[in-house]
Length: 213
Length: 213
Image (tube, rainbow over all chains, first blue to last red; front, side):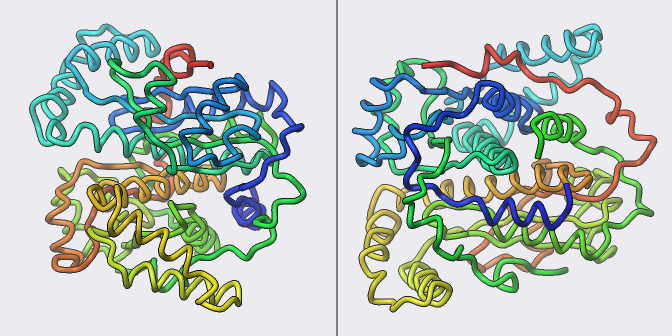
């Protein structure tokens, strides 16, 4: 991608407040965005998340009601709910190590040092005291990646934290599972009537957010 | 960007373990990546972060020593330290509102409802109980955005949490400030000798991380 095209893409992106409810993301384009979610990097590669893609109008309506009534939830094409693990168990790390062995066609035993290192950090070590906060951060890498990838494909998004996570968990059947709701990101196409699309993007001057050492 | 090019870009990206220390990111390309950082979306648009760009070899060497000795910290072209606010005060929200008024050329008074809503949520409301965790999540949106943008421009990165944040704060003069270190991301160009570049990417099958509703 050319630098100028990247900057244009990032400037084109904005938190879409009004989606065109008639325009749906074509299946092949959506599939690309799902692949982008799957390919998101994470700490140790552990992927401590699940992405729930909601397109059922009845469920969207229920979720809108617990999202301060915001219309993006219903009017978007695909609603992505970003959830992360509440916990990390030894078995979860073993499950991941099995997957490495499978994908790279190496014996599991050859990965035991890596498994022990992860367990040392996540199950017994410093991360064990902040697992929920740490898994949430990973899910936000996915959120950042998703918005940028969507913009690169000409798809609009609206990151949202204004929702009742407990009610989301209830509606999506997450209560009692290892996952909980963090944030959502409706995706689709902006309505031509969305006045927010025309507003200048507000960022602090570069000198206020970047320091050189 | 074409869908196939996006997927190729995301597959090309990997956590670079060995950078070519001789190759530096050209100034204009780096400027684009700084703009990408600045343009990162955040909750309410509040940008509760600072990005510290380290290129001084002496500082890089000190930071490597508190990053489990990992060579990426020294061998990369530009090291980005992702920091986030420890707190959010009423004045910080006022500062942001002033910036909105300035960029959009509207009277500050016209934004008082928005300011009150943010203060209600962040200073008095539910977010006040989790400010550090919430600002950290925002910084990870920036991390996700940064890695994807870098890959789109053919720049390699390596997201890293394996470091002593307290020591980073000490070395970078953050102790006693409003910001603290969360994670780092060396950027530059992969060494042709990095065996990790050739390993298959390990992701769980899509069916295990994406659910449809």
